[in-house]
Length: 254
Ligand SMILES: [Zn+2]
Figure 1 (cartoon, rainbow, N blue to C red):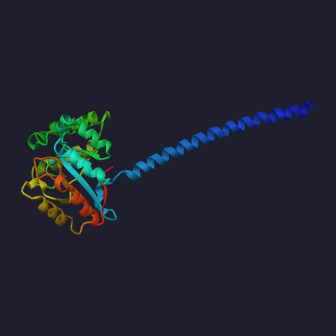
Figure 2 (cartoon, rainbow, N blue to C red):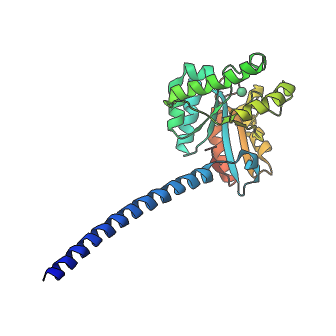
Figure 3 (cartoon, rainbow, N blue to C red):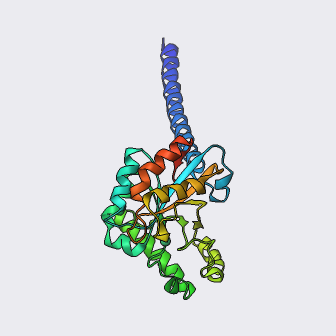
């Protein structure tokens, strides 16, 4: 009788130990699996800027520079929302400071907020490397304040006038290394409606876009969300419908 009781007690203890082991094992591995899942998701979701034009399929990245502005940005956001399209906004830091609520809405709508310098003034930007660094840092600081994220790092930069233009070419080439050390990639565009030339009617803007998209599978479309140029928001709906009909899907840089 005593022996049977002892055996039963042992079985009970072993069962408890076994259950504890299963509990620890299960917790550790599910956590580990979740972490690896998260890491691989992030890697999959991250766009490799250097290989952006090597992707399969027809993809259009709509980008809007030089905002935010009260007069144009909300109108563009409404149109993008209607089409359920996520786009990219390369914002100017001092304008972010003036209109933080528009940047917050842009971010909350799921658009990518990229860095387009604080002043958009080449003579300040390229005066020395300190200015260049500060223009970028100040802009991310203002974006972070606007969207409520401390130490916001936008990761992606667009040079005023684009890297490819000949304006301040030498300076741009010199500062690329600094940019990369700061953890930023930069991106230009390969399609545009020429809104910054300020001389086109709405119809012409649309035709300019059609011309510049010809025979391209991957489009990075330059437009502006400011009234300092031709107002692209007037042709955005038609532009999106055209691109949809041509078989493009839309992405941003997240
Ligand atoms: Zn610009």
